[in-house]
Length: 85
Image (cartoon, rainbow, N blue to C red; front, side, top):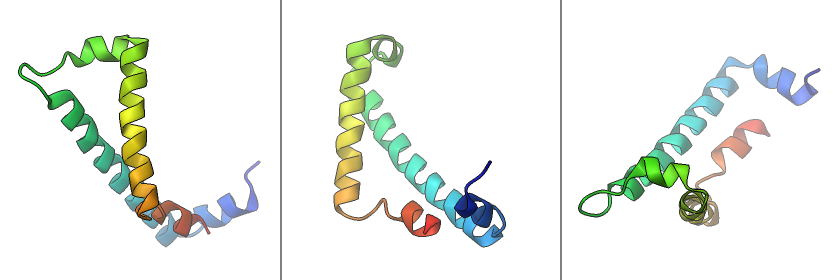
């Protein structure tokens, strides 16, 4: 079962495209953040070791969460909410 709002969204090609565009924008922004985090230092950090380490992942998650909260505070993450309403 899909909620009524989801069924309505799936029937509107323009809203689907707007949602996909918003998701792509958000994902690309955080990919840039990840590239920055893994590209710092000389030599660059060992991303495989970081992603295998629970504390490394927690530290990375905290950093990305701070970026997200910064964006939310500046209303950059309202596009998806606007599409879904």
